[in-house]
Amino acid sequence: METAAVKYPNYGDFAADCPARAALDLFAHTWLPVVVFVLRDGPMRPSQLQRAMGGVSQKVLNDTLHLLEQRGMLVRRRYREAPPRVEYELTSAGRDLLVPILALGQWAHRHASHLVPDD
Image (cartoon, rainbow, N blue to C red; front, side):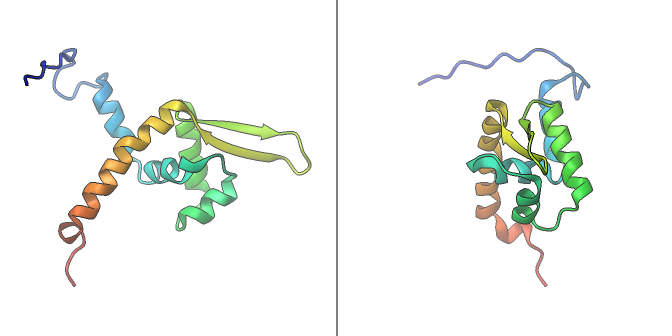
């Protein structure tokens, strides 16, 4: 069975406006895939996210959440309560990002011996 060749727009090598480069830039942010993975089961408050992730500072978490919100990967909901409550939830684009994140996780599991340095 032959597969049709996929046609991609010609953005040039590593062009700044290339969507693939923009997508890879998301993975360059250390905590971004972790936030998306942790939010996979539904909305969470920032304190819940921070506990679930472990090792991330409040500032870095806030910066990551803001970036994901700007990129349309998650939505921030603010509830008018006392004290105010904020939750973050993945959008459909954010849920779609789970596909490569999970694939990368599977790859890492298969090749863990190459990724973890010997002591």
